[in-house]
Image (cartoon, rainbow, N blue to C red; front, side, top):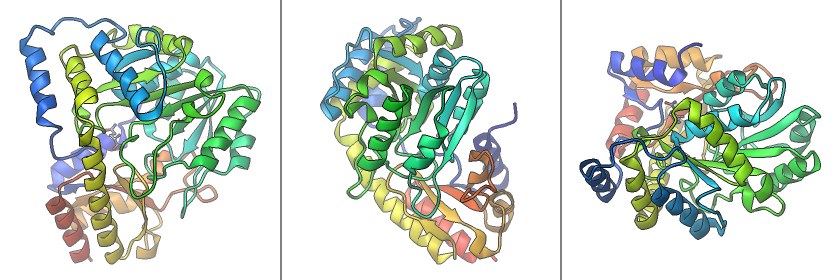
Length: 377
Ligand code: GLN
């Protein structure tokens, strides 16, 4: 088990005093009312084990959130489980649903915890590559990746690291393939509220015939700028939620008690926060992408998430890993090499030369990063 790229690059940023555009976490706090609600819960005695599936007020608030935003009906007692961040929901879903030898079809580039947990479950991954410049999902490649051993398609939209928001055609293709081959879909939607311009997130569970075969994962971290709270959830058919709950018993048993009522209050009352955050992030995206282009990097414009992808080959670099490991010394900036998110970074249209930059930072921080990049040789 190696070190994750996020830990490696954040440590490098601290060691070199670099501007950290690597790991995706905001440098401003979530809504004050959310922090106050956590403090009140902490001082109000919510400090012993919560129920394994999560406190009722949070499960009810998650069900209301899914209904208000997407028209999804959920029974909060059977179709919602609270997890320790979406990371635990991913772990629970894969450990709970995948048997050794089962195949998992996953979009590539992939978030690294997907592959770690597919390995932990003894599963076999079948990547489907999203290729620059538009990072679209090719239905024929998806179809070709699904076979008799496929247990589930692991989806992620809005997509980390490419910033794609899958559109209606791509979602329809996933739904068609899943139904034709009778496979499950597990979908990581943590950036659900962070979309830009006219791009809108549509949960695949809302497509015809999909509610009964889709497990949807999300969290409070990205929507309310509290990535360190690690409060996530899985929702969907009781049987699939039950698989996550079964695995969760042996992972964390239960998640942090005082944070749960606070997140419930945010989901119910802070509807404007993620809307404002997305508008703000769109401006930060434009600021960063503009700066990266001026520094000579080919940059793709993300439709959602915290992340922009660039191609460093125009600057004469073949490997994004070499580029990112040299960048702190040369420019005082840290970014993430996307090559770690591919089975074969040298495969057709894969990302040896791609680098991911986080823009969930204050404008002055992005300015400083851009200034340093422009000044570097
Ligand atoms: N999801 C965040 C990112 O992609 C944080 C990852 C992590 O630290 N494990 O940057």
